[in-house]
Length: 313
Image (cartoon, rainbow, N blue to C red; front, side):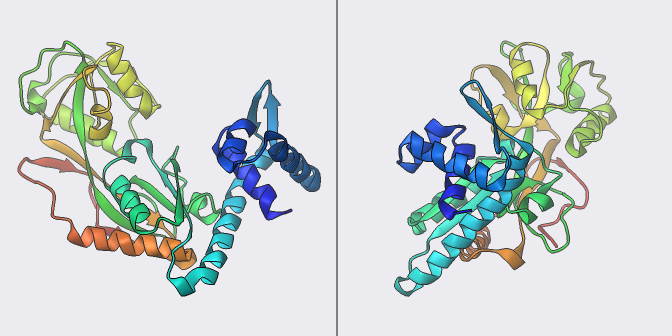
């Protein structure tokens, strides 16, 4: 197995096909195809299922993604050692983030990192689930993960809180609401779209609405968190979603803060014992950035999940 083969394999994964991989790598499509076929022959397994013109990772292919990314980071770290004499920071930073958290602080951190270290590369991809962070990091799929807190971190993982995300009320366009925050006791009589019971923030929201004496009819209970806003836009009902999600469709929903506010902390998870040199530089930047940040506005009462702390070990 050659380094170039793994690089081409990951390019196909990350660019969703050979055409995209060839364009990203600046090589001809047959070069990528040949490297991929050679890797499959050498390993004796199919890494992709070819479906029409599309390519879907096989089980073997999925198991190779993490180790391949780890190899690329290790090679980049070795290259960094060779260039250390001129002070350049090179290498590859692999960060995965839950979709609702792909804005704000983490984007500011990545932008500052790229400004300071232009020779380093950053891969910023979507974290589909928050309950398997340990395996994603341990298996090399990413070096850092951004997720909601609190979370069950494995032994040895460090979590640094990056901030808090507010949840906002959203209703279909045209819904008449007074200006300013909406008290839970004064929510409009509109069915709601919620996630199933058992989700930490979802339970806190439902319990607070119930304690406020408001009886809300459920329009839809969806396990797909990302489907809440499209369902609101479609007119199925209202919901409470992350502020970044609520602000993502201006004009298509009516959104308001609620009182009390619902705030949920989120943070950066990583294994300090296996950080690459470029990863350690990023951690240093994170601590520097947070030490300069002022405390958030607490002018309104809020609801927080219990036992949230600035760092967990």
